Image 1 (cartoon, rainbow, N blue to C red):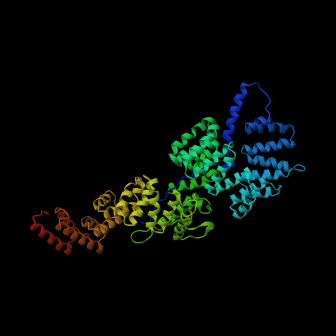
Image 2 (image 1 turned 120 degrees about the horizontal axis):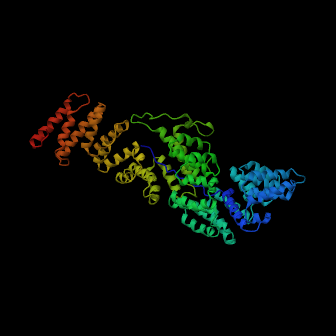
Image 3 (image 1 turned 180 degrees about the vertical axis):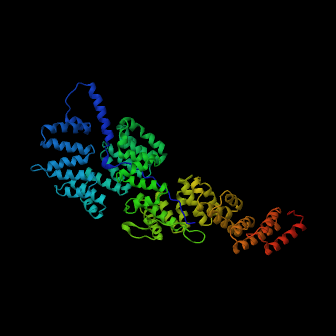
Length: 601
C-alpha cells in the first residue's frame, strides 16, 4: 500500500508591499473628510491639505480641475502623477510621466519615476529599460535591485545589492528582498535595527510583526502589531495581518471576525481590495475560490497557490498540474505544492491491483513535464522526492514544522519508514487530532512492524472519506491482526459491501490470520475466497486453517463450540461437490467430538 496523505497548507497572503495603501482606506478618508467639511464654513481646499491627510482622491480631483485651465503646467502634472501613483493607479501616473517626457527639455528623473510605475505594474523589463535612461541615483539602484529579484536574476541582484548604502530607504529595500526570498530572520534583523534607530517610525512595527508571523511566532506578531494599531486603529494593512495571525492560531471564523471593523469603517468597500477578497476565500475554507482566485492571477502571488490547493481538495489533480507544470518554484510553499502534485500523479498512476496490473489509465496531459518534455510515472515520484528534500534540508526550513513534514514525505517516497518516524515523532505534539498526520504516522508505524501503535494512530482518523479508502482499510486490518485483534478485522470486513477491493481485503485477513495463528478467522476468509474462486491455493489454505483451528481447540485456546462451525466450513466447496480431503478431516473431528462429548450437530 504505497500511499501517503499530504497536508495541503493554506497560503495566506499577508500583505503586498507594492500596494500597502488600499483604495478602501483612502475612500474612507474621503468620506470622513467630506462629513467634517459640511460642518465647517466652506473654503477652497489646498493641495497641501489633501496630501497631508493622504487624501489622494481629493488631490487628483483638484489637480484635474487645475489642469483644465493650463494643460502644460509642469508642476501641476508632476503632482498629478505623484497622486495617481500613491492612489494605486500607477498606469495613469505612467501616462502623465510619458506626457511630461514629451515636453521640451524634460527632467531626466521622469524616466526614473516612470520606471517605478512600470515596476508596480509588474512590467519589470520595461522598468529596467526606463530607469537606465535616467540619471544614476539611489532610487535607480533600488528599482534595478527589486526588478532583478522579481525576474529571478541572481547575478544582477548581487550586483545591485553591493551598491546599496546604509540609508533608511536602501536598508528597507534590502529587508524587503530578504522577505520575498523567504529569508525572514534576516529581514527581521534589518527591521529591528531600523526600529531601534527610528522609534517614531511606527510602520516598522508592522514589518517586524509580518516577519514574526512568517516565522510562526503568531503571539509575538500580535504583540508587536498592537503598538501600530494603538496609533492607527483603522489601518487595513494591520487589521489584515491581525486576522491572518488569528487564522493561524485559531480558525477562519476568528480571522473573519477581525476584519469586521474594517468592513464597518469602509462601509463594505474593503471587498474591492484584492488582498482582502483573497484572504476571505482562505478564511472560508476555499468558498468562492473559482470565482475570486483565477482573475487575481499572480497578484497577490499566493492566489495561484491557493487555486492549486482548491483543485487538489476537489480531487482535480489534472487542473492543479496544469497550473504548476511550468511554474519555476522559488519559495517553500511553491516547492511543497509542486511536490504534492507530482506525488499524487505518480502514486495514482502507479497503483496496481492484486494481479499486478494497472488499476487505471493516465491522462496524456499528466505525462508531460515543463515545456512539453515527456515524463514517466517514476519521474513524477522522483521529482516529488527531490522537491521535498530541497525544502526539508534547507537551512531556513529544516527546523520548521513544514520542513520536517517535507523530510518525512521525502523518506516516505523512498520507503525509508524508520526515517519517516524520526521526523513525524518530532512534530507529533503539534497534531493531536489531525487526520492527515495520523494517516501518515499510522502507515509508517505499520510499515516498520509497530502494529499496536499503528492501530492506535489509524483509529484516530475520523474523516469518512479517508476511512473508506482501500489503503486505509488494508493497513488497519493488518494492524488489528498483527496486534492480536483478528475479530475486529473480521467485523470491519463484515461491514463492507462486496467489491473488488473487499476480495483483496479477504486475502489480507486469510493470510495474515494464518501467519499469526488466528486460524478460525483465516478459515472463514479462505472459505469465502474458495467459493468466489476455486483456486487450489484457497482450498489448501482452508484445509490448513481448519486443521489449525482444530489444533487450537485441542490446546484449549479456542472454545469447543467453534468445532461445529469448522465442520460447516468443510462441508462447503466452490462447485458444491464433496471434497474427499475435507471429508477425511471432518471424520477425524467428529470422532474426537463424540469421544469428548462435544455436540457438533
